[in-house]
Length: 183
Image 1 (cartoon, rainbow, N blue to C red):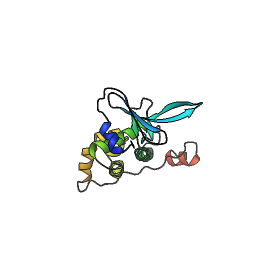
Image 2: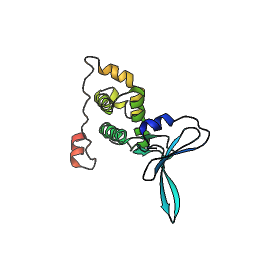
Image 3: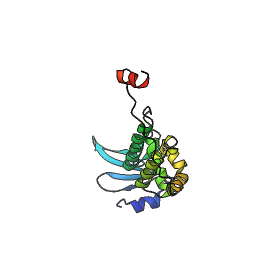
Image 4: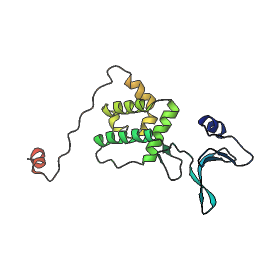
């Protein structure tokens, strides 16, 4: 049987009496647990013995947590990285985030609200430019929590005000910084 997206979706989450294995070609197969959990496998031969290797539960995942509970596609990760680049402008001392958690939040936002990566980035960009929201929306989780409020405020006339632009911090050991600030 050739593996297809439709066939796999129909098997996902269904209860089975025993573990099912559905093979494709060139060594690819899926193992479906009794509870309907799908794991992709690759079968190969070594020293005359056939061995399966688990590829993973979500082959579309570009990043995932060690437990596998937080994951995101390559586009989710790209959106999360773009958001962090914007956060670094507002908060230059921000530490690198947990990328699987950020990508997971983007994925959840897309799935729950049926929005695109463009919609997510557009809303984050607006929040990042708004004087009030720029210091409150510093992660995809916060964006997801405040999504409805942000979208409502985005559509209000007069709410598209620009944030106060921050001047780049000068190095404290430079003579110019001391002269400009204190002398």
